[in-house]
Image 1: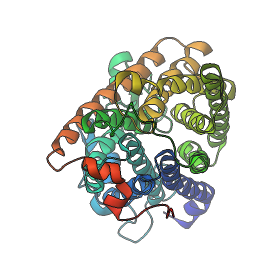
Image 2: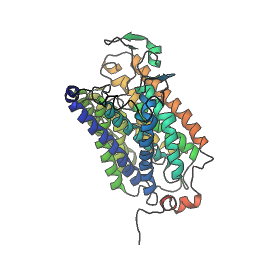
Image 3: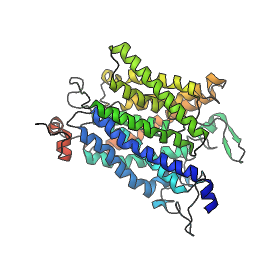
Image 4: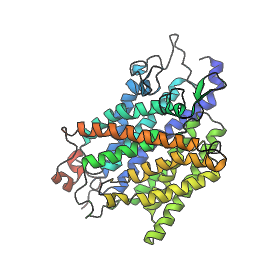
Length: 434
């Protein structure tokens, strides 16, 4: 890459480095969010699950994650060759030592930095469904296997030109045909829209959380004991860090410091605020109180819903998308008691439900192709099909991984769970109570 090219794209490069840093901050933010929601004897383990996932995936992504997700050798439309760019060979500099340009005109290594943060946060999200009862070593092994078998292929399928993308060989092209774009490339007439990760991140993590909650089983006393958040200020702090980092997540997915990034920023803020209000109103009507936990959870629900749609909606449409997400997730978090699965920290109720709604909602509110803006049914059909395909893909593979790890042992003993997972798994306690 020449000096002139570097200077021409320096503003975009600077923004994307900042966006990558913001998304990386989301995982420690998630640690506070989940840690505060758990009980005092489990807070350190809950935070360690986020940090542990970060450590495992930060290494794996360099070795084969980037290659499997964004390599040029497409294998069945499902994943790319993990050995093509193994260890990031031929991905950072060329034979002359010059930085290789990425798809967006700045050095490719910046794209790698940005994308690894998505793999980390997606895996860490799953841990919220398993709070207070899972062996730390099994969780680390699961993180490495799951990100390889599920996340990297799904990222390739949606963002790397695979089956769930707008490529000529994708599902959307089979549904509604293809056209040749201005660059001479054959693409789907109606391309799936996942601006920043509704399918790849939130449907993916939410479905994996549901599967593992069923495989691992309930906490001791689930349905009989009140599992109250031990530190609501931690929850609020975690939500604040997630919201802040989410601007890198969504606005960064414009891949440039331009109007699309600005639109994503405004839509993200608008939808999130609407979701907070809707969640609090739902609580007030149902329970008679508007809670801080509801405000924090509503914010996350809004952030999740707008993630796939941040570049496809206008701010008014984002208000409706976020408000519906707040109501749906506020109602959905209670389903675990009705159906008897222990989704400890509401991964299913927030990430799966709002992720599905945000992905499908584009078919209604998308300004270019949505039903409410003059579009026909085709975008809605494509969004539904892509969401269902992601559900099935993640559900089946996570089930296989979950049962394959059963001989190793998922759960700590009942005695250790009663004593507290912080002390038994990490030989530490968060608080020294006299």
